[in-house]
Length: 179
Image 1 (cartoon, helix red, strand yellow):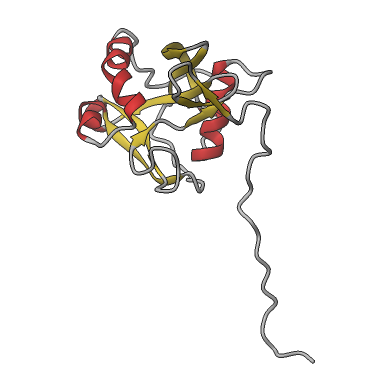
Image 2 (spheres, helix red, strand yellow; image 1 turned 30 degrees about the horizontal axis):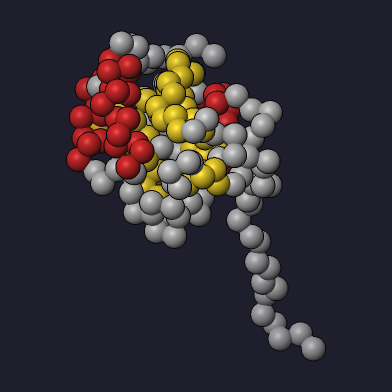
């Protein structure tokens, strides 16, 4: 019997197939770090108002590790990936950023513990790209570099932010990147 109501289909949010890097590494001190082969995040810069640099930040979902803090789109590296490949993949998964719109400038190892590393990949985009958050993000926001430290930052990102500012200060922002 037809009720006249339209058929309803629930389509789950497309999730990444778990990679071989997903999992925790526990240091000799007992601290846990995400990423069996290390982790990487993307520090994406783009021109802001007046030409100053803005960076894309992720407000981590409340349920996630260090939820409620701001950091970079990023995550676990798989065994076959470079830090650059992992950061770009994670940025596409978590923020909907197309790889062909990013120009990687450099990489910086910003944490190293018991053989585990976190690498920040610094990249530029010609404009502040539109984002599509996944379930790991409460919000994605373009933030002026000078305002980043005013937010409640993920502890790892907070510990590396000043060093990253020094590195980015030595790399001119590409306003019209050539791909």
